[in-house]
Length: 246
Image (cartoon, rainbow, N blue to C red; front, side, top):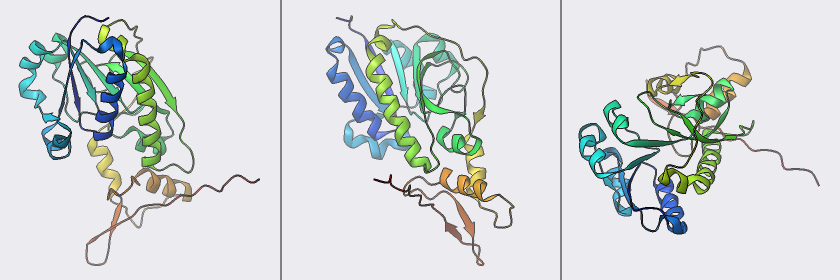
């Protein structure tokens, strides 16, 4: 039985929040651990029906380090201040294979730059998606993947890693390893630059398909070009793999 402790989970992902709660409920070793779930203010409307309330990490972190012995970021859109991560143990569930494509939307950039994709659970330091690695799992990217299908596979890998390691994360009984290189970092501005399709840009067919499938994420309106009136025309790509014969 683990000693009682207070764990804060900050997430802006409804699906991941629900699955996280299911995993906690399945672990008898965590029965004496108190879990609190919060989100970013921008996600309040989506998360409140699930009993998840907003927190502003930038201003509330002094209170958080007093109230919690562990803070877990599960696709949280807020950056944790350096002072916070130095005073309380903070762990990130990252939808990328660190150190490749750290930052925003790793699956998008894995499709574009052909760097590995996966799921990583790591300690948080003062830099983005940069801390010591606790556990990770590679995820393949296929020619028929869009951003959404690759992302769904990454989420499944994240939940597999959580299932295996959640008790150790709470108990602080895990080992870590340092990334072998700094890797690369992609910010929101890098993603935004991809959205406007220049109809006069010269690309190979492969580059064009990769660009469109990397920006296709279900019903999200990402890639676009401008019509003769300057209005945005949004573009999604449908890919269908030929079924196996026999």
